[in-house]
Image 1 (cartoon, rainbow over the protein chains, first blue to last red):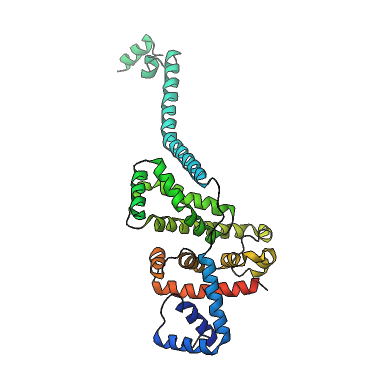
Image 2 (cartoon, rainbow over the protein chains, first blue to last red):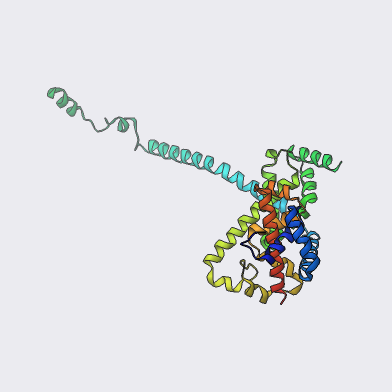
Length: 135
Length: 184
């Protein structure tokens, strides 16, 4: 017997344990003796057995449309997964298209001509002569 | 024979057969709802969590290998999701200090006073169960409600059999005490 445990508590624990697995011989013997002499312990055993039997017989209320709800949930997850899959790709494609449109617009409005890009647009012939002379 | 047909259904469902999947849901709906219901009580979240079990399984249906039975596999998902929900509730009750006084349907363990006032006598056992600490509740649910053996419960929870047995014993004693207190 566990000397740190109240003898009554120890017997109750053995009683509960004995319903699921065999006790060691010494504990089994003490419990058997206690059951013979204690009305309270016998009542405890009866309560435990009734409680276990009630728990085993539990049934939740039926939930109508459970399967339909599961199917709806799956469809919703699939849509969400599709969005998560497509979103970065659509975002990147949109950015590429937007930049392309901006560049084309700038090009056709002459704000982005070849000369401007090369930096020679504003170079006058005199400037060129001056540059050559300085060399 | 039953196991064989379930295996066939699993194979078909893994191959994309929707009807096979639906049959499996119908087959396992009641036990899974019972597990979640015992863990979370008769709450709207319990229904959502039970549905989530099957949604999660569907999403990883091809990862399922028939080493364990489908029921065991689904029960494990149900237990994990229920524990997550209990953690979420605990977090919520930490922040919603005022709300807690008005929501006795989610009582914390040892909160007997609040629980007793709000409960119907006929629901004593279920309500007492909801007051048990999650560690105790899990073993009771798996062993006494689901009917798994001590060995199977230990394997499912990945804890030693001795721990399951002692938790089970203490949980039953605690449950008996709670019922007595609630029944006063």
